[in-house]
Length: 359
Ligand SMILES: NC(=O)c1ccc[n+]([C@@H]2O[C@H](COP(=O)([O-])OP(=O)(O)OC[C@H]3O[C@@H](n4cnc5c(N)ncnc54)[C@H](O)[C@@H]3O)[C@@H](O)[C@H]2O)c1
Image: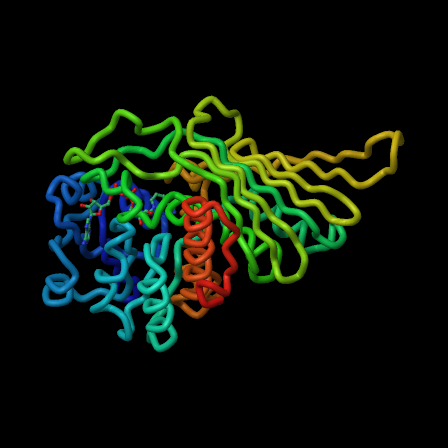
């Protein structure tokens, strides 16, 4: 028991509980505290922890009341910067849910503070860890498609779910859809392309969802469909096709990477990977299909196709010195910056150079 990594969970809503269900599966993790100002979130979360644990309304009370080694932060996006404040520079290991922050200033401040943080600082870009996505990335890295030239990511899904206090209905709380949701895809683009973005063009708006919703009289202002084109410094071009009123889609994510030798596609959740080498005009196709299966235990512990499990596993390895920090605060910052560039682009109907944001 003494060697266990003691976790405090900050923000115990939907994602906090997904983290708990996964921590319950990690032999070296022990949950010792919950932090949330909303009593109902605390009691729903306590119900899925085998032992009774301490709970607090905020981080200063946690620091006064309970010893811990690591935190997972899954409070609303706009709270990340301030909630992390008292923990930065300490030895506490931190997994901060995406997006790192909602504004460029807050994201830059956290990335700067992370440089001198004494524990592990990891940003929750977990789409990297969905097993079919991870296998797809591995294939591209191994040279299977030759030199990557084009990367197309499509997410067609259901509308944003209801959150505690409806915080996700307004861009001021989320950073805007292109930050809140799409930071995952901008992170994947950077990871797969292996270069930094130069310019971003996004056409998007809230055209279908949330039209009749009002919160304190205000109508939501979050993009529900968009096309985004990103030019990378190494000449690769990427695009993101987002639709949040496509509930009936078979696959939620479809990614296609095309190089000078072949095209590779992955479909999630089906787990199919399709490899199509170039054969020349009118020659018979040589398409190969394979299927990546996700471990049932990892799959059932969350709603993200096993991603939370595999990301936590690597976070725990990094804490124990058994592996590197794979998603740094700088990665988190750059994904936020791409999302903010897309938000500006959609609002102002123009191409946004990343240099305008200081990159
Ligand atoms: N990795 C992913 O794919 C993924 C998926 C869903 C959510 N998330 C992220 O997880 C975070 C939480 O999202 P959610 O869906 O669980 O929202 P939620 O509304 O279900 O839960 C948020 C919880 O945080 C609590 N909270 C509010 N202010 C707080 C504060 N100052 N300190 C501590 N707790 C506070 C709320 O009371 C609530 O219980 C967000 O940053 C979100 O972007 C990530």
